[in-house]
Image (cartoon, rainbow, N blue to C red):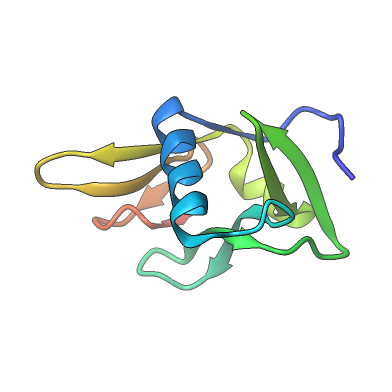
Length: 114
């Protein structure tokens, strides 16, 4: 069930294009959503979760830029206002997380502390 409240995160157009391409290339069923969250670990305390998954009982579900996004309610505190982008540069290629709640991030850009 898609919830109608405002989504806590945003995706850039480049990130949406890349996520749709990954879904297509890997044959991921449209019944799966994109799980966004955090987990303990990484060099700064938390690391990001980003991957396609089946909906679970305790998930909040959002429609963000045409993507079904799954997020555990408790993760919203850490992710509110975050923007996910896809960078395809000379020195860096991959998803980047611009998180206004992160007090400190590591050099790899995939972990943070709050």
